[in-house]
Figure 1 (tube, rainbow over the protein chains, first blue to last red):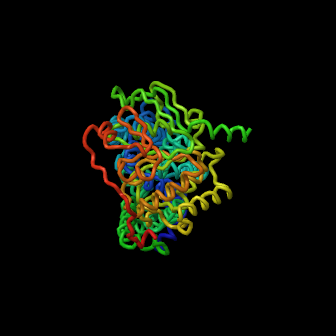
Figure 2: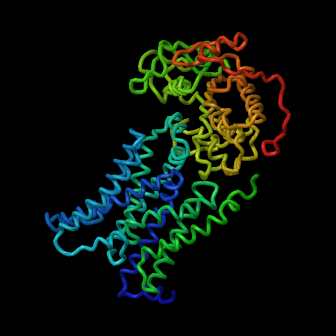
Figure 3: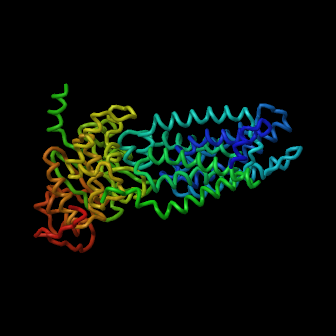
Length: 284
Length: 260
């Protein structure tokens, strides 16, 4: 672990510092949105959004190389495709309730397929694996600002609309009777989830980002009585998993994404054993 | 102005439907319904499953719009009087593991009262008062998951009450609640009926008819009876076949520690 902290200070290992700071910053958004995702039970939707991100990344790499659109950075494509997937899934689940799982599954797979096809047809070598499973070498200094900006946006909205989002997540019908615009808040929730997912796609990868979104919140849910407590605990856990995961992966020369997720998974399993007892203390 | 409105409320019927019809796609669910629930009534909607009870309730709540006909709640369209309607949904709609406390749930009843997203001190006081009214004042900081079915049902009533409604609508409030809790539940409703109109949906007519003033039979069409006139004939007419009616002439005296 000591070597890890020395490496963080090493001017030649800037990539590690960027990954570390990105992880810490993104943890705030992950803890908050992960809590909403777990409480509202939309992990499957979040999974579809994260996988559709590959479509956007592939398309922007293709456009950069073939059409010469230099501004079309993979992050731009990722944000665009994540938001598009969120809006499509949101509208489908609000309008036609019966077949939503089919549509979610389709977007999940179509996003992946489109991404792989674009990458296959992009001249030069791009390793799809590093997007699928995460690669901290992909993170640059400019990305930190992007993460920070998205972080601020997600956190501000999640706090300002806390009571309404809570009511919509807990009991949609009652919120509607109280005059809350349920459709708007549901779409807002999905779009914020989409932006959050994009933040850490490159650290833990498209396939595993969903675990970093839901596992800290799921563990926090075992320990908390209220949504905001769950958010705070989830943020702390997310920071812990990213920091320890990066440290272990550096020390033992392991890929960062799987290391972070494996640690989160082990803690989750342990929390299942102790959960309920802590949460209901002092009440019958 | 306020006084004038209050005066109106006493004379205007709580619910008034004229020739209201509604269909999901092409399947008619309720047809040509005329219904008038006077202010201060305590009415129960009964009828077979799929007969349109819940649809009628959703029309009154403004969650659905009638395809044809005129619908007035407290003399106005349902959207305009949202803040005067208290709604208690079925218990089964809720995720039992959702991380909320009893107090959080009750506060949701104050949403949309002044259009802002944050709760004031007055909101919190109203919530605490509503909880006291359903005898759960001490439970405010407890997770909803730790409560019994009967207690959770009362939390949902408190949530509806803390918006200070003039009309209380309840959907199958006695489903999944044991008999002792049901008795207690109806004691609370009868007390509330002194100051507000109550309409509830139930499939359990035998139990309910002893406690309510009016029975609204819903099976695509609607027939209203004062409970005193209710006979087996009416029940057969609306359910279409013999229905088992059970008389409850005595109170059960089981004590349930959890619910005490």
